[in-house]
Length: 290
Ligand code: GUN
View 1 (spheres, rainbow, N blue to C red):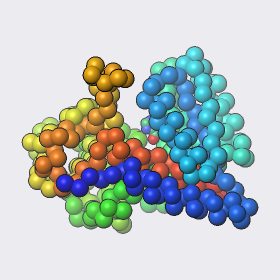
View 2: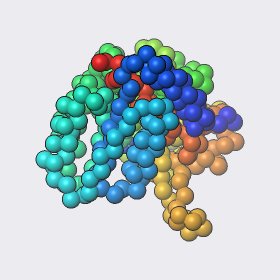
View 3: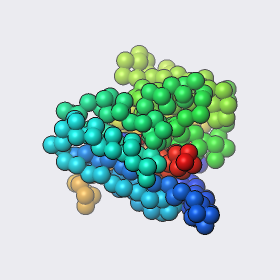
View 4: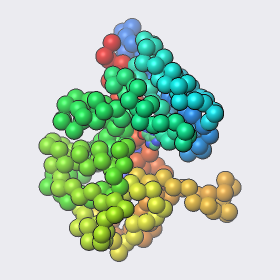
């Protein structure tokens, strides 16, 4: 089985980006500047945002982290978004999800200027993506496309099964893989919590994308020999034998799939680092708008 090493690929792509940023600096151009808004104390969000900020440094971008406590009000969040929309020094920004329960995520998303929406979550970018127009593509699905492309995994005419229908992963992944082009041109089935006979669908998959957030739910009996598995899940499972008290695992039972899949992303070190790289690519693109 081939390990789809997102960590190594992300390092390669970040190296390429670093060279491009060096060129921009030498020619006196605009150095990309990403801002990240982190609200509350969700440990997973903290870890993701830390990784996004660290990656900005690695490629020579400027970054700004805006941190606020859970007690923040809706109007204060909207004020931060407005300031970032209007700050000429910021090329793009993200508001890390999930937000605390009392904050309306849709209202925050709608307030983001689509030209700075490097997450690709606003209606304008989702609509443009759906129509095949130039847009900021959502980071996780785009990271997966980049990975499939760089590893030379053909999607055209393949049966792809996407598990999960979230706005962030499942839905855009389904749209992007079924569109005309490369990677794309796949026959895509989207499954979710109400799907009857999940196994019927997953067993037909040439490529299976798991984005459901249930630890190790996909097992060997659910797939056919030679399947390519993209595991989007990053789950924390209690494990007292670990120093930090938990271990990270995907939505796929990696061990049982190893002898059946032809290629698979590990967790961690698979899709996660590619997501960050996509965000950086969108930020670079946003900075060129000036
Ligand atoms: N939470 C989980 N994934 C993401 C992401 O890609 N962007 C943001 N803003 N929040 C997330």
